[in-house]
Image (cartoon, rainbow, N blue to C red; front, side, top):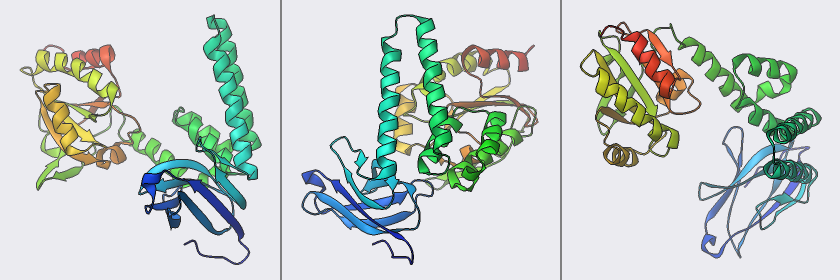
Length: 325
């Protein structure tokens, strides 16, 4: 149960659960850090949390470790409705109203019959979300909106936005985003490769076992569940078939994926190159990879020649690097 703290405000969160959840463990976790804040057993079709909190924060309800809903844990009575929306407290109600307004703009965008109309509505949506971020810069709604926006920003844009809203710099997810940009810069085109070691089923692999050994090496950081990754394997097959006898090696490194799922995808899509399993987040942390596929071409000395290119751009990068081969 959540510990009481002097001066903290009480909360009471009620979450209706299905019959098959009876007796399961439900948690409230900090969205930012992942740390568990409170836990209860589901009883009578309800997970009922009571405790105290120092200040409002963005949180998640988890059921047996699986995500159930995201909400704002704050003072007062909070109840979840059938749509898994938290209602009854100030910030949660404001959060829901904002979502309803955004959905209404989105519906108008979908119904628009011309590109000009869609562009105008999209600009309206962007302006609305920016206004909501500014109005909520001192609470968890603003943090949530900042994270959503940050996912579409480059390094310079992110830095500018963080300078505008310095209060968000304290959050762990924002720190990780900034760190990922730092790692991307350290492993950009023209920089030396960053080594890593992974292990699965007693077998260890180091990137330096393959990269920097005199060959061009194309490494596909991918996952079996990733649709764009699977589409790019067809592009990589074309590259592989053209250059496999001209000094190019291809390697697949499965990240954020279960080994058996990776094995099944390798077989299903007939991937002819070597595949490393169960890399988890090791390579993605080191290279600052926030989305996959991330395809990197390393030169014979380990220099990064191309990064984050796909389809025709990727083919052109390989063609340029191996010209005359």
